[in-house]
Length: 361
Ligand SMILES: [Zn+2]
Ligand SMILES: [Zn+2]
Image: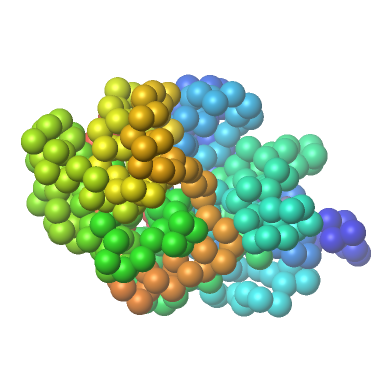
């Protein structure tokens, strides 16, 4: 088995990894150390350079979705340098910069894995909170850490053109908003609306614009217009302005909703779509309510999208390198105090547009 080390354990097998963890649900982030599982044949050890802070880190620390295991080391927008290779790793080299997102493995044999939709695999591994069966490291720990061991297949080589501290948010906010454009075959010239303009939205706008779409930002906040234009939006619609909405009725090919808050008037969005248009959700509002009239008479599709497939992650990184699509980040040195500050800013929704915790080298 690839998981059983043969021969004497490596010299560093008792070395502890320093990380930052919540010790209980809603607990603050504190210093944490753990003895990692010995490096497996198909894994690499990464020195973490930086890690983005995602809204779902906050949900996990709060155990909003249930099932969180504590101590919990958050962080799934990880970038770092490969420092050790498992014996079977041939695809990566020591010294390479790699990125690791929320998904760190899949079974490889189920229907979804076989058709290249690994993000839908029921046995997927996650960068944190996946049980390991090991006593010293009972579940996986995320990127709020100095080091990390992860399957080489899910550590993606980072093109050298992308600034290192901009990489992290691409691995979650980036892939989440990239995949829908690929999967639903959004094409050049399409009229695309990005609903909601935060961490996810500001990536989606850039992707759509660089794909050659007529890209609109649709948001409640009129003051976000200059920022939307800076990221490539050709148009801006204030979703509380009935007149503006009416002037775009039946005109959009594709709407991507990054909205996670309550109180959305979904029928307004359905009214914006052309016949056969699609509304794709990547945000998770508490509920979705609408009369299906527009859905029926315009043959609309409401669909969702979750993370990205292995090949989509690679194509996104190439696209970001080629078109210089990067997140706008606010950086803090990685430590417990700053991790708490970053999570608090995420909770208060004051981040423009992604927090990144950077390890001092
Ligand atoms: Zn995330
Ligand atoms: Zn699978």
